[in-house]
Image (tube, rainbow, N blue to C red; front, side, top):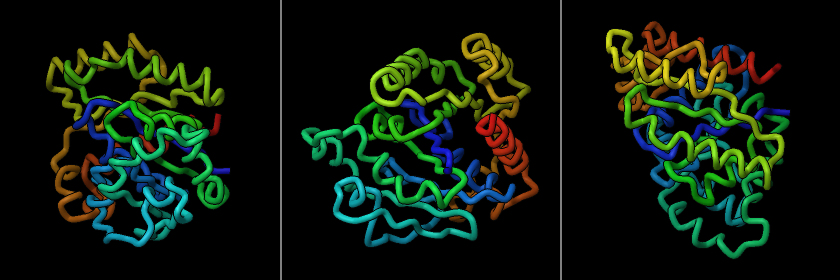
Amino acid sequence: MGKIISLLNHKGGVGKTTSTINIGAGMVELGKKVLLVDLDPQANLTLSLGIPRQPVTIYEAIRGESEATPYTVKPGLDVIISTLDLSSAEMELINEAGREYILREVFEPFREDYDFILIDCPPSLGLLTLNALTASDYVIIPLQTEFLAMQGLAKIKQVIQKVRLRLNKGLEIGGVMATMYDARKVLNRDVVETIKKYFGPLVFDTYIRDNVALAEAPAQRKDIFAYNRNSPGAQDYLELAQEIIVRSNK
């Protein structure tokens, strides 16, 4: 049965969507079959891979209007796309019975088909994020190595603990990943050391270096391996994907 992993940080601009795409693509490079789920109403993951509008998105699936239909980006990598309509989903589902479990039910038909399901969560801690956490085995927290990016970590931890207590006892923090890292910057190094003090061994050994190819790839509607597999970004995400696979199999 496939492992479900949410990538979560309620602060925007930390590399969450980039990481979801490229961790997934890295896993495919390592021989895994992966499903990406764009749970953000901004649909940045969908746009970054150049996926055209489909008849069924995650929005219709959550509302129960249709079964989710994965779109194949390349062999081994599928996506359930998002749409701006998803922005109204939290209000529409607020009175639904068992509303925190809706996404878990959406994924049930797919779990046997994939080695990993990666969810790109919205930059908030609302009902969509609670659904993702309730459906997940692990949470990965992408963290930009800047001072402001560290604010709110305690809140994320608190939300995860509440979900584990009330909704999903099997939920674990799968790791914390440092993004946009530049070893030449004292601040970046200091932030990583602070993260390590706070999260200990949960911090991944692989840091995602600040790399222009990672910014260029979405403009070409490609993952980093399709765009430039020799770039530092591709190297970092391949190593990180390997780390995640190893941790999830322990």
